[in-house]
Image (cartoon, rainbow, N blue to C red; front, side):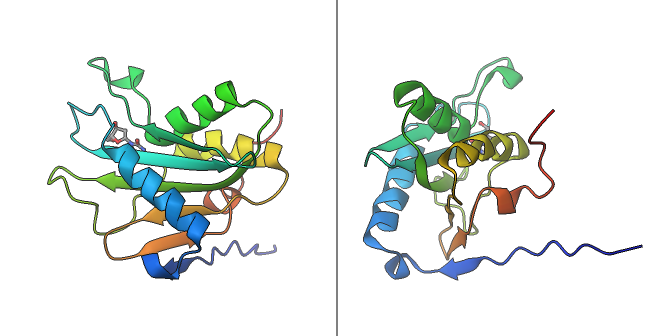
Length: 157
Ligand code: THU
């Protein structure tokens, strides 16, 4: 028997510790929360993706009366990025969410499992780790890569 240690080390940083490009991305994710369509959960999520062509693509969750038909902010952003700029590669991702009180969540909101899987595909296309910034009111988590959020991911068949 052999134990395999899967350890995730992340940084918890303040907004003013971010680089200029990270700040722009975080601001884009925060702005995107305003464009969520979340009449059922009232949980408004925004995602922003910096591409290597300099574009920032924003997405927000879009709900539906038939609940599973909606989509998360992260997937609305990454699928739009892929559809709009198929040649561009992901450089960095930011995610923010406002709760039912309308305020940014105290702790950072992390992507759901399906979004991690979807984002991982684009990290693979980028060919390098794509950092993820998870934005909370009190702190921002800087995650080194999408892959680190999804250990033992399904990647081939
Ligand atoms: N949601 C996202 O947009 N991203 C996530 O990673 C988690 C959840 C959305 C889906 C749904 O519209 C609402 O948040 C509540 O689950």
